[in-house]
Image (tube, rainbow, N blue to C red; front, side, top):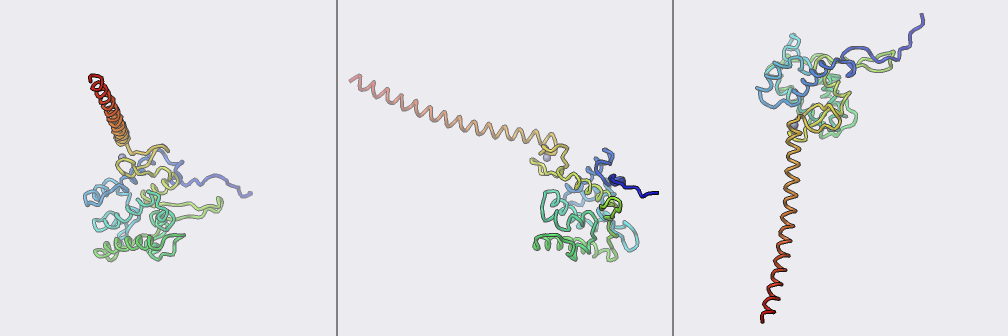
Length: 259
Ligand SMILES: [Zn+2]
């Protein structure tokens, strides 16, 4: 039998945004939004851990226990480092998108490979140094209490012979969601009103919610009214001073006429 020539798209489920059921995609994007908007508090960290257990970015082994340190209280610094790096990618920071930071977030390279600084296309050295330092400190804060901690082997970028392309095989919901967002990267937005990170449904969407949209519109109207009011006040002042001058001239001529 002749080998079949295959021009079809890869069919490994869960990889392509268009192949994913809409409710699963909404769930993944919901988790990613919760992750990127997480604050610095322990309470928020615990809430994320209980609501999104499969969103820990890259599995951490605790000396032989797989996933033993995912969402551990001792791994909060690592979460904050992931979150901050994700925010930079989200905001369109070209250094974050072009350096190995994105590859690290997707789990394509491991933490030690990020640290070696070899997996880099073109990046500002000072910027990259700060990122490496932040990740190093976060990892060390976990190692202090768990010296046996290791990050499990990476996700795979797998070559497909028939398609002549690479296929990415994510392990966690975080990696899956971020990969989906890479494919629809125009949707990664920061709200023009409350500065919340959100995933837009439409290209023109600038606000995270109808509430922020409404508040922004009210703010614009108020600014317009204030501006319009200022112009009116200037006009009134001008008219009054002109009327004043005319009245003064009239009185002067009246005085002259009565002499
Ligand atoms: Zn908003």
